[in-house]
Length: 228
Image 1 (spheres, rainbow, N blue to C red):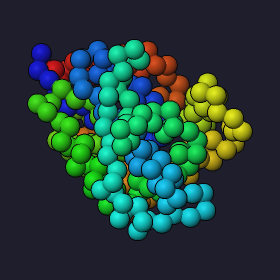
Image 2: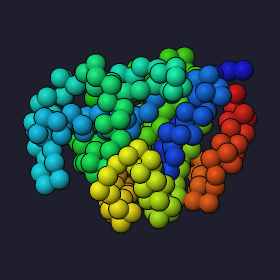
Image 3: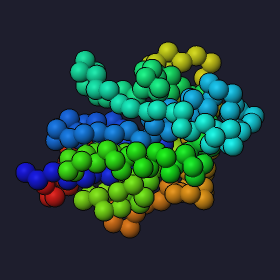
């Protein structure tokens, strides 16, 4: 069975990472969560006072990009790779709603995207990789063997994200606040000048608004089997 490159793009909270992890585990491929990389940069910017809910000092972040080191370490107990920011495990910290509210602004910065896209492309070794994000099929791996574009209604995505945050013990959150964040990220991701979120011409669209995880996985996996 030959190894291929699988690109998964789509809107926030469409379950891209969950699907990518499932596929990587089934196929024994390398999995890379590019969203986690942008979240890590956002966390760094927040921790260093470059960004908050009212301001964003892009120039300060750009000047400090060389100080940001991101890598993944596989957690055998959890079954997936966790993201480390300057040698500190930040897997939990980058998943907060606070980071979610700021990440689209950071990921819209061209210098940030250039740095991370270069790292992402270097992670591809002899294929056998599943990567999810916003521009994998259009910018990072435009020659990917198979591409998927995930979507779902904003309401369904907000409900999923809200439940996820509650399960993680997040406090002081409301469904309305999560929905607003989802809609805001959709707008910023789709309208940014550098690598906006768009469906690649050769990507397979998957609307999982009313689809369970098992059904989604089976549908995508069966499509992949045609290429391996």
